[in-house]
Length: 145
Image (cartoon, rainbow, N blue to C red; front, side, top):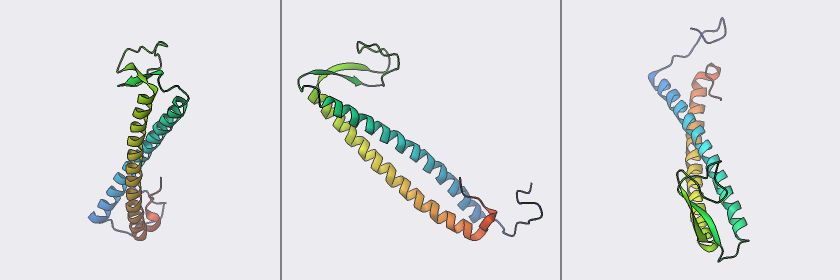
């Protein structure tokens, strides 16, 4: 099956090394896309924690606040704070909840930094592979999304 335009012949021979580079590029692109999705999710979660922390600053320090341990709040959560499923709510002082939220925020910040570093590293490798492959194959290869 010929993928080039009609009447155009492929002038480049694809070596085993070329094929390995093309495969590596493809694998890295998949990993790059997955890491970007992970980064968006982490950033969203961090933003939510920051928003909750801001709201909780308005609450008296000795007041008890519902805090979910384990799992996520299902869409059909009981308004009394009682859920059936992966986790449960416990009543903690506002100051304790703020500490836990800060710990979670710090952990997410570290994960975000690590993920951004991984993305940057993969991006550099992709640029290098892209320039090498385009130098050899020119318009005969398409490495764009």
